[in-house]
Image (tube, rainbow, N blue to C red):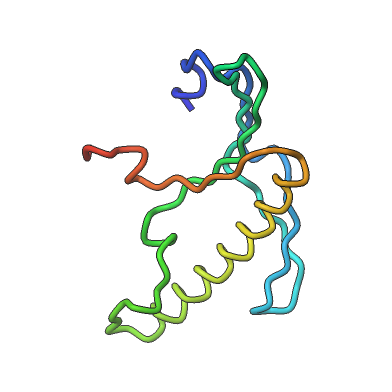
Length: 116
């Protein structure tokens, strides 16, 4: 959040201000997704661009299919969480596309490219 407050190209931002509805086939129900940030920036052409930003650990961004698990419950939990995230992000991309916004998922690898 400090980054948003101090970055010269960001002129407005909000955290978890609104919802994006998404359907999760795992339970056949509609849910509400609260994106982490909505950020309004000025581009190099001095135009306004809106970004929807989700911040997740890299472990939740990668498919659990090729992971080796010793705990079956953990495997099930991570598989469901991954599927939910994919449903959220598909809905977010569609939502953003309809508004002319951009959507991005950021992990610690982007936040701290050289480690902490």
